[in-house]
Length: 81
Length: 81
Image 1 (cartoon, rainbow over the protein chains, first blue to last red):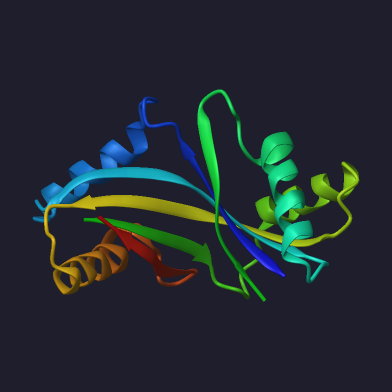
Image 2: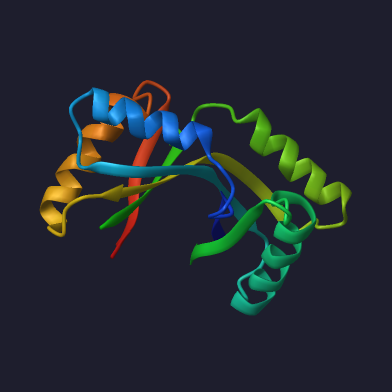
């Protein structure tokens, strides 16, 4: 089973990289782009077919390894087979 | 309207960062983690409520700015209001 996990800076943490991309969009003429936030995505292949097991595992991994809880939020975007 | 876009290395491009994370998981005792690929996620806030307009805009941005078509694939993960 594959889990797709997104890790983003918390909304109140400045994201200079996202801001730079938003400005680049406007410079290229895409002035409908009003905000960009950049984060990390992890595609994690797990040796289990049980959704609950996978969810528990991914939760632990995010809390221990993949996200910095002080400045980042994480979410499971979806599971895939 | 907000678009969530994922940019990943193409499957046949080595991902040493993902590999390092996979090994770290195993070292921590999570031996059910068989593969990890790391990519970038962009949350793009667009000044439009039209889904087709947003989709066209995001497609152009990905091809011109957000992804390197030589080594990366991109996908629109979802739209949100």
